[in-house]
Amino acid sequence: MAVLIRALRAEDTPAVVDLYDRLAADGTGGPLSAAAWERFLGFEVNQGGVGFRVAEEDGRLIGLATSSLRSPEGTPLRHFRVLVDLTRRREGVGGRLLWAITELDQALEAVTLQTLCPEAWATGRRFVEALGFAVVEEELEMRCEEAPARRSRVVEGLRVEPVAEPSAVADAVAALHNLAYAEDISFVPFTAPGMAELLVDAELWVARLDGALVGYAHLEADRGATWIESIVVDPAAQGKGVGQALGDAVLRQILDRGHAARLQVSSVNAGARRLYARLGFTLVARTYRYRAPWVAVRAALAGRR
Ligand SMILES: CC(C)(COP(=O)(O)OP(=O)(O)OC[C@H]1O[C@@H](n2cnc3c(N)ncnc32)[C@H](O)[C@@H]1OP(=O)(O)O)[C@@H](O)C(=O)NCCC(=O)NCCS
Image 1 (spheres, rainbow, N blue to C red):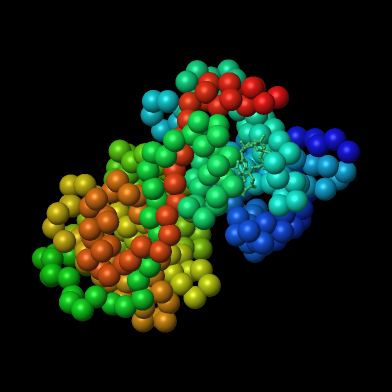
Image 2 (cartoon, rainbow, N blue to C red):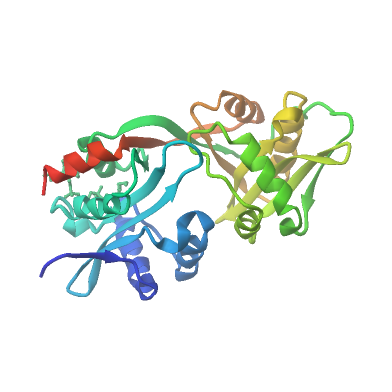
């Protein structure tokens, strides 16, 4: 039977969930509920899944490529992930899925392709390195199970507290996100409605300095742990101990509920790494951010066809 590469359809959800289950065997998939997949598809950044492709054979889904075009400023960037069934590797399916993804941007000039590959995903790293992708930064996963011995210093006029209704401050949070991460390699801007959607099931803490919202921490509970998705302090209020106080407050709250605290930080974000180290976080895993110019990947893939 021929392998067909086509756009993702709404009715593919059960087959996607099955594929993730099968991929748990080598640690590249894992449990995924239909609701979690649909929620992922609904994220603003995923543009409704228009850039998603599947590989189908005889009515069975054997591969999936997720992708979305992100163009903060400057060069447009397509972020992707390719997953191929364990029993169907090294047959060119991954290459065909990625080719289909590159087809989406034929009309654009100077697109960059990007993927995130955990250190443990040996096959993925070989796949992208064979296509000329290079590491531009590492995402470091850190964990903390014990509160720091000493409290952070007192900052005059600062209040750190949880927010009962995160959507009510989504506009201020989106603005802070866009301001604080603007220079980051992985920056994705948020609109206020996009941020409200992201925060639907989230726990949000804010830091107010003399009443003004100058920082926030976005937390997500996940099976006995709490992820600190983001800690942001307004660049104008940085260097005053706000980040330390915010981090300290949420960390103590997480540990008090019997959870471990987890987070990811970029290898190039020296300030945040220092803060997390001071709070007692230690490294548990690293993920490589790979990038390559669209033209180079197209040429490498075309050479295989
Ligand atoms: C990475 C992955 C998508 C590749 O899919 P695939 O269908 O096996 O890829 P292809 O058959 O198109 O491989 C293309 C080339 O990549 C390289 N490659 C892929 N897997 C490799 C491996 N395990 N070891 C060495 N090279 C490998 C080879 O150069 C291969 O060409 P060749 O088989 O002619 O030597 C698949 O292994 C997978 O699902 N891995 C888990 C998820 C993952 O790591 N995704 C990558 C993040 S985007």
